[in-house]
Length: 254
Length: 243
Image (cartoon, rainbow over all chains, first blue to last red; front, side, top):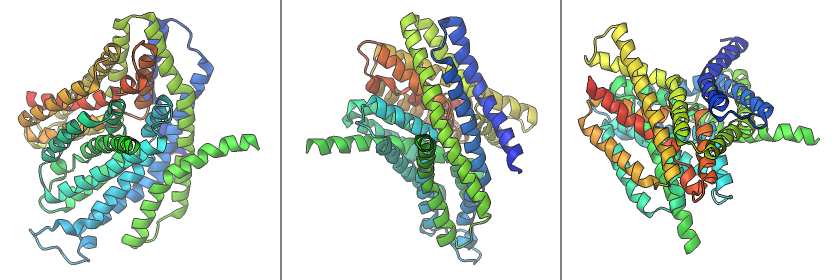
């Protein structure tokens, strides 16, 4: 697609996404709070920055990184790459053959999470509120490691074909146990970090990987097995952020 | 000079945030798949756009989304009307979710799965109404989540009981929900919170917790997003059980 029309189109889409939010905010401000917004001009400029920023961000991703990332996800899961050009014999799947897929899953999960704007927003707030105890980079890296582990395990699940809920239920039980021992101030933030990891950057690439894998591994169906990677990516950051807080607590004590 | 730095610094920060993606893609393309990078020019232009976009977005957060979220939290706290605050919380959750593109995509896929599984008739009308019902269900659940989350901040309830209770709900629902819906339900928890909603809702929570006496913004201010990713799982599974 041509760059300028694409940009214009994406800008319109972003405006459409922001409209309901703006309607709620300004509606309540005018009808219920009935006070002028402090620094109204600045706030409106801020909204414009967010609109243009997101539109440029999305266009750049769709122009350059997504196509390449999606092609790579397809190539890596392709039996031709995995088995060196020999047609794969039906039946036998060895999970070890997919080692590069797990590595790619972990690496792309980590890298896209670092670039995720909503995680950055929460990290900025967390640093501000905690007075610097929780660093922007500490939180981002802890979450990114969680996403990396989650997506790698999620691709492993698609290859082996074990039911999704075994992993998710076990993960939640683990989170519950961790919560009992974690410092109180981190708990809410850790739970939040599960939800913020999966938006603009991560979801399209990870979905492509899941669908690519589910449609090339024999015996998997893309509709049934392609889902679930996002769930892994939202669960594991909770574990790593709680773990990060526990580690820094022990270090301070010892 | 000072001006130049003010423009260059955020750009450099964004480029640093993007560096891992570029490294990962370059490494796998060149070293593992052993293919050349296609269309290098387009790749560079795209990366530059992403970097500029991210820098603008962060600036917009600082001067637009964060301040408005906080100032509304303070205004509601001063006004002292819990009902209006909860209504606002619901509208924010519902309004931002119902039109969320990621949710529209997931709802469409879910309708495909349901039609293939014979749960609903395989025609556009039934698929459309199934998808619309799912979208409304998720939006309703997110609205409710923000309401519960705001109530928790007001009352100072510890978050772990609510979240653990919610997870227990997810586990129980998983046992009874039809198998095809489970994966979609789990994923729907992750897709509901968009890049614009997250900063707003976070600023609202932190603002509320800092303007109410006896609340700690760190302990009580976060957690709204967590509710918003939890309730859709339960509601979507319930939706799947209705058919």
